[in-house]
Image 1: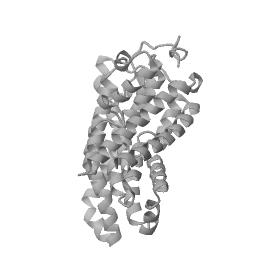
Image 2 (image 1 turned 135 degrees about the vertical axis):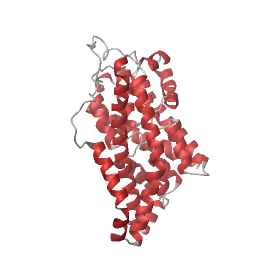
Image 3 (image 1 turned 60 degrees about the horizontal axis):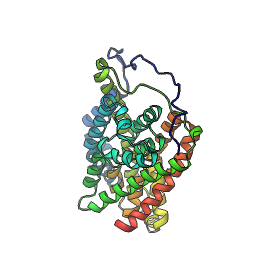
Image 4 (image 1 turned 90 degrees about the horizontal axis):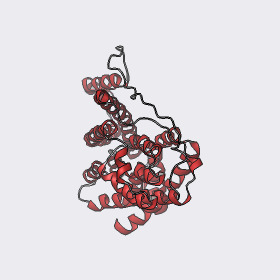
Length: 342
């Protein structure tokens, strides 16, 4: 694919620093206050709630839900802190200087860069948009978009904790995720069209006086959004384990191809953050290791919130094409790696 220039030529660049939310805001109940208030209510009234709703199936549901959230929360916090630090401190020009000019060669470099520049799915989309707007080859930026939330050390460590005694699951996740990112980057380099992309131009490096404020704003946004999806994922996983008849789960789990597709589609719908999805996958013990691997490979690359973010950043024409092809490539890579490794 030729050098990327149409989208970056003669675009206006604002000299003004990016707006940072003012710390002096009116007192009120925002998302953070409501979250803290809800946790306090549950903590103070847990005995009354337990006595009122005591039932064996409810106890089992609560046990699965709490176990998922408690195990995943430290990794979620660590991941959002690092993601916020990258958003506030690391300039987009870092990768621009490090990547080769040839898109085909830049794709593997950008894909492996996901290991050293970890970030959540939500953070990787605007970072990729900023890279493209500054002249980085779209194929390389998109490979980084897919790999950063999927193969970084936090995610791999969380996977090892969620699957103790099964290092092959960590290896399979690393290989399948990286393979998907590289294949998608090369596919874009070969077949991608400039008119499918309309990246927004925005400053990515805050001024010196606003770095701490930018970090706090990014941390609050990423943590609240990611924790909300974690809770939804934990609720759904606990419900599937307790409410859905074992015969249904066993029937789906017994069909290799169907079970992989079911878990891949579940990852799209649940939209659990990559720092916590391994714990949700580990709790779904009725499914095969390959099916649970599909949940962890597809989730950080294709889910409902990512499609919405990509639509807003790159346009609808890009989002639907890229997401559908990524889903198919991720499922195929998962099936191949699962067959070879698991």
